[in-house]
Structures are given as C-alpha cells and as structure tokens.
Length: 162
Ligand code: FEO
Image 1 (tube, rainbow, N blue to C red):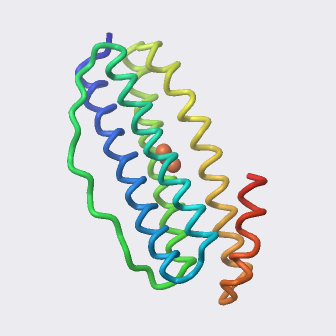
Image 2 (spheres, rainbow, N blue to C red; image 1 turned 120 degrees about the vertical axis):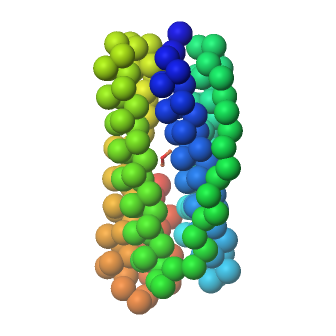
C-alpha cells in the first residue's frame, strides 16, 4: 500500500524519533546529575513521547504491509555549556523533526498516497505543540538567566499548562 520511497522515508523517521528519544534521555540524565529534578522529569517524559512517536510510525509501516528496517541511532550529545543551550538544542531538534515530517507530507501528496497523508496529520499537529512547548521552555530559561532554581520552580507549572 505504500511505495518503496515512502517506506524508506518512514523508516528513516522511525530512526529520527528514536534519536530524539535518546537525545532527551541524555539531557534528562544531565539535568538529574545537576540536581535539576523537575527539568530531568520533563525531559524523561519527552523521551517516552518520542519513543511513542517512533512506535506509531513503525506500527503504521507494518499495518500497510511495508518493511520495517531499524537503523543505528546516533549517539546523543551529553555535554552542553549551559542549561539554556541544552534546551535550545532540544528546540532545534524539534524544528528539524518538523521539517522531516513536512518532507513526508510532501512525498505523500506527490504520490497521491492519501492514507499516509491522513496518518501524517497527527504528526503535523503534534509538532506544532512540541515546538511551542520547547520554545516556551527556552523563553523561561532566558528569563531565569543564571537562576536555575527559579527555572526549576516554574518548569512544572509551565509545562503542565502547555
Ligand atoms: Fe517526535 Fe518531538 O518529535
């Protein structure tokens, strides 16, 4: 039901989502080691969400009779000069994923693959939410400046409202 090109691009996206999951897990560990438990908890939750995205894509490939080919996941970055730099890296990651999802949409439309186009809409909407949440977190990190305890204090409330 899907073309080889679409199958390959969906498989690539599975790897990207697992890559995001690993990247956020590394950040969660870093924050935990810095005693920033709320930020660690936020990124640990993101880790699970990204894994969920990967599995959702993988299940779709299986459902439409495609072939799942898992690839190596790049090693995540563990060190960042500042907490804000780590959160900015997460935002850059989300922007990249948005671009990748849009490339899948472009291919689905070009191939008139309406089933995959419909399936991808969930990811398009999810990315709007994820970029918005991460942008908000970058803003909070900017406002807190060097006061990481203040960032810790607001991160739970802020992310609950996102
Ligand atoms: Fe699955 Fe946050 O992109």
